[in-house]
Length: 85
Image 1 (cartoon, rainbow, N blue to C red):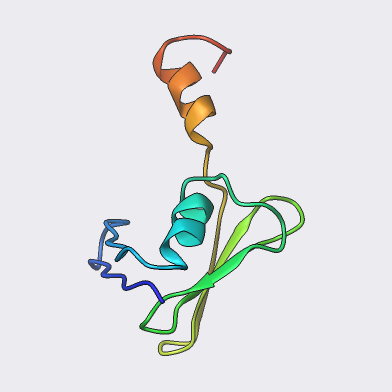
Image 2 (spheres, helix red, strand yellow; image 1 turned 30 degrees about the vertical axis):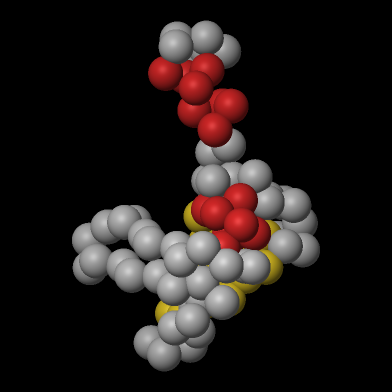
């Protein structure tokens, strides 16, 4: 399982290296495939939905969050001024 620490205002995350940390890193970096999922040591579950959206479920607080991470190759294009806006 991967450990994660989140500050109240941030997406600052720490993932401990183990079997699921690679999958979690892919999901958080926008490189996950539909159906991929990972659970952190604290019980937070990340799942990639069919449309590429990432669902983050935190049972401790009963929260559910959806995000659309941008893959690194798209971030790099935007940073270089290539590929439009």
